[in-house]
Image (cartoon, rainbow, N blue to C red; front, top):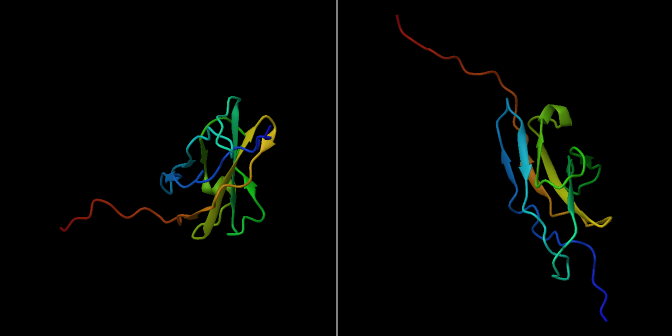
Length: 126
């Protein structure tokens, strides 16, 4: 009998990731749910996710975003996370099933928005 690989599949895990929001609001990182193991068999247990960001494309020095949970998104604040405005950060995530954690998902790069004052309003000539 062939032994099943118990590491959940994460290929393309963050390919559909979405960054929403603006400079003044919270941002949201989201991804599609993982439903199969790397061998293609269906996951029947609870699937938990961990999301991370790094200032390095090699994903060194990962910073976990919140705590592991079953949701397929993380809401975060650029400033609270310590991301440098105007820089590029890289997101990744891992799947956990039955205490077994997957490898990192393919990294997603994002340009951290700069913080600028609002433009003047109500211009008029007199």
